Image 1 (cartoon, helix red, strand yellow):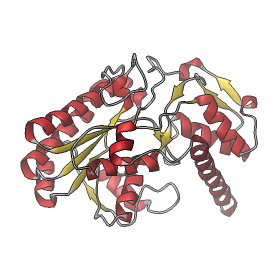
Image 2 (image 1 turned 90 degrees about the horizontal axis):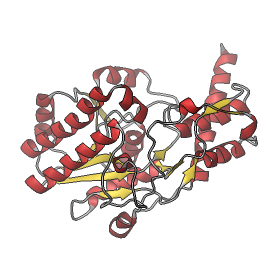
Image 3 (image 1 turned 90 degrees about the vertical axis):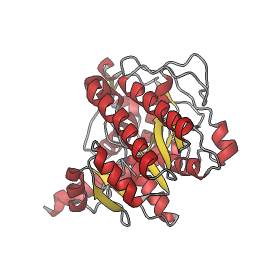
Image 4 (image 1 turned 120 degrees about the horizontal axis):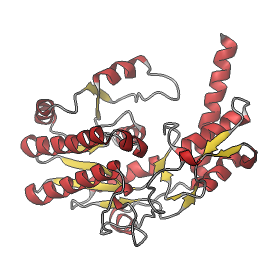
Length: 327
């Protein structure tokens, strides 16, 4: 698993371990040292039972040696620059990282472990501003951000290696999925952390951009089950993974602040600078193929998701308060 210390990697590691897999997690050398130093606490990225390896994702010879040695049954490629605004700030690095690593993995699998099944974490950002909806596997790909361009290119490489070399290579076109492990830079976690912090007196306001912006938001724990099911199929295909339900930022605010018994409108300030430039238009997943062929569907409602996230952040606030008192 690449990207194993990220949100999806953490949930996927647990999902695979529960099914008896031996899980190898590839991490940058500096991340490897930090991971073992900070093994405990509810925010820790460490997962007991995973075999972590310090690894240079940009080194061809490292990929060749790894795939030749391990010859894994399944490979999950989740790593990359994944925050869309960052891709505008560093487009060259985003392209060099997201596209090149995917290609290195495919080449190493082709040459040294051709029986390995590979899952690539694609994104609904590849659809950009779709003219029709909801979006399915045949919806035209027209990205409107550097991040979306890199996801579209890697998605095409997966398809190319599947057709040209017969690899069991699949993309999951993932719509937005969240959890308590999302970084605060994502609006869902920003809202859940603010609700918890305001409720416990550690924050007095929240600033957002367009609260009427809509997305198809789901729970990361459900989505990793979809990733796993893609590689259990009898035929290598790409699948859209999403809830098929629209949620606005306003809905997120209602769910989060209801959990702590507060009226969010008393604490919210609007700043247009937080609205995403060149924003995509109300993406909505048509995951009927995954439902029909994989038996997958989202199980967690947006209310359950936001409550889960707020409860997690309330524990963080309590943990912080306990640490202050102990000091």
